[in-house]
Length: 78
Length: 193
Image (cartoon, rainbow over all chains, first blue to last red; front, side, top):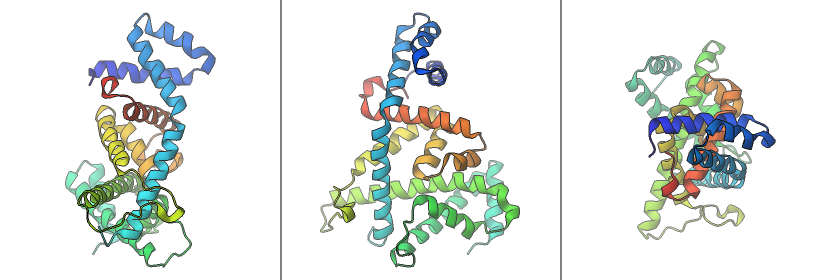
């Protein structure tokens, strides 16, 4: 658990970074973080997470669907 | 057992912050969605894929009615139904896992319909726990995930349910997915919430 203010800062910055075109994100983050390397690293890792989370969420949807099918077909047993 | 007016009144009371109304509504919607889900099993809707999304719509018609005058409660109902869907799925996953651990004679046929391997129930329960943590940081991000993921709702429906713009839903959903993905795939040392 980080502190409340830190989380808000990360979230705000992450939201703003997502609004920037890909090519401008690096410069945007450098300017916005003003030497706070830890903050910059965290937001960069979130941008990476946003970019690569697609297959994770596709799998999660399949998982939800199969549990849902099971809810429908096996309610009486559980 | 219930009538349209009761649900409408409860929705209004919940909107005013009445937590008893919320509990009562949750119980009503839980029962209705469970009943609709199991009815599918008895073949009344052969050939239909009864998604969570379809059931939420059907339950709305059941409990609130077709009265166009009630449309202002629709979003609120959907927000609640998404929470209930989450609870139904998680309750079920927990019961299943307990059954599995109990080592009973029950054959897990989860996901076997198309020859797929059984779903990882722990993964769904982990996601649920991560979502609870995220919602502790930002309640609306949590609600967006409930609507989009557990309720299977579209961006437009989620926006209606939460009373925000579609743009806001899209932005929240993108961030929430990244946070949960990072939380569930990175070690606890780097957890953000």
